[in-house]
Image (cartoon, rainbow, N blue to C red; front, side, top):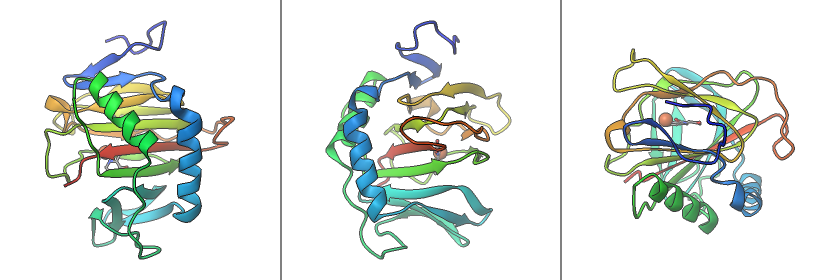
Length: 211
Ligand code: MD6
Ligand code: FE
């Protein structure tokens, strides 16, 4: 597996059914960024509680189902617990990007109903976990990275399986599905960096079909 190809423009297979698409989101970034800023102004990201404790990332959502945590548990909720309002629709630019990335990775007709927005700063991380709160595991997950770099950890079906370390940059997309749909994954602690668009932050969009 070549994680550092000279030309970071071609898809890189990272596991069975999982694909890293370097720079795939760059062409739509101006439109994407504008819609994301509008969303976050109305639905600010909040640090969610989970039964494991307060998350180090701040979270907001778009789409029919938002991902929400509390000390009682976590999962998909149709309204923003902060405003009590339904989540806004996923903007067309993001829906189209997700469908195009999924298709590039071999998953046709991907129509997500959930877009989780995670905001990381220096020291934020996400421990190894599986995404298994969705109903249809035939649908892939599409993850879009903005801003400062992150090391995405992509393991296997078992928690102890070795993890590949994927050096994600602004505009990179990762798609996983098929055999790797329930593989363990996480984000290593973020370093202190600056990015011209996002400042000291990394923003990740995770698109899924929840229900
Ligand atoms: C990321 N997030 O933020 C990856 N999975 O780069 C996740 O893998 C994730 O934030 C399940 C539930 C919430 C998440
Ligand atoms: Fe996840």
